Length: 540
Image 1: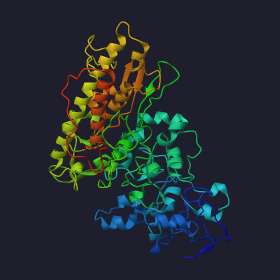
Image 2 (image 1 turned 180 degrees about the vertical axis):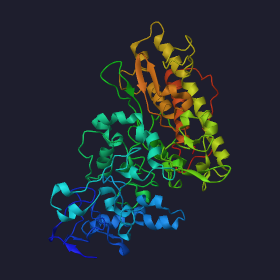
Image 3 (image 1 turned 180 degrees about the horizontal axis):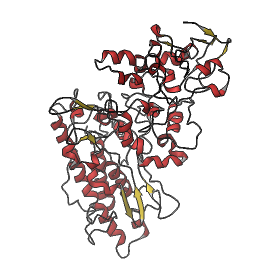
Image 4 (image 1 turned 120 degrees about the vertical axis):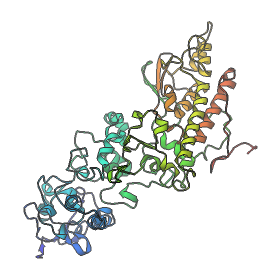
């Protein structure tokens, strides 16, 4: 093909944006006349070596992209045995993923120059840019906004029964969750707003269409996946198998794990407890109120689910892929890609995953197959289910010793005057008795950020709260509301630590306030210590 040259110059425009990529070269801009001349798609400069035209200047991004699945999209399709014309638009440079809007690229000229998901698949036609690279208007920026029905970004292709990433993502808290409301508060942005997550959590200063706009972006595809490539699987921005705060999910799910409760200026405002503490529980780091005389070394409290032996960590349970076939014919019907992020998902009657909150009863509906892969829960899904149900029962027993909200009003009522029972209501009765002092009520007051044994116990109870004991997540004491995001995963995030915190908290309540023994049977934290957990006393 005829080779065109532009003037020799410094090219300093990043592939995903402008003036941000230092990996540039001083050279001539080289490009072939576009086969799709109407739309200006350049495609490969040399298809045999997968050298994109854009990569002639953006050499760093070219090198990263060449190792991605996008660079092999066409060959993988042909090797799948399922190739058809209907697949081509998502495995080539076409009108999907950009703003062309009409058939383009391979859909117009089916040439190898347009094979694979190249730069222009997301950024749009590059001809105007290579002809006038110093003109800002020529910079082909990509879009990060994804949604069902949107074809101008990742959601142009990652959708449908074979790859329903966007449909499932939209069901998740990342795609439609209530946490998105927090995107209006600056302190919340890094974990609740897509652009801030990209910039602040991962140090990516790329440019894109929505950057600088007034509309907040959800935690979409590019918040977790680097479009240009990465050293981690699935082009993720951080590793899955790193049991630390550098793990992909833990980067956000590790905000606040220890007291004191935060208190707003108003006496009746909400006091916030642990926030985004799921990851802290999994890795056993800086989480929970540590009662006096706690028997374990708190620097060695990682969950058995939070060690490198669980190679996917959070994703093992929260990103479960399942192929659903018709029971009668065996024909493919749906490929669940696990992007609802629902742990141990709940399939409906046809095997399709549905939100577990809609499943009745969820404990018998959850699919525990992912828990019994590799060396985990040997014996099959039923063994994992039994362990899960047993753990919930243990936690519920401990939580009931602390507070039973017998009248389900979400208020810590005084023991003996209503249906509430447990050590905390017993303490409440003491604080409300005739002649009680301000010091008595201060132990359960959320109008200050002093961590008493009672409030520390409620902190741990909220950390450990199960779906069955959700009153610990949002309640009232002396007219002040306290709240905590659920963090325990029904105990799964760190079974041993949660049980140890609860039993030690119960003991602290009894010894600190001279309370009676709990009415519920008290279970010991039994079994061998998990790997890495150490006692701090001489009886270890």
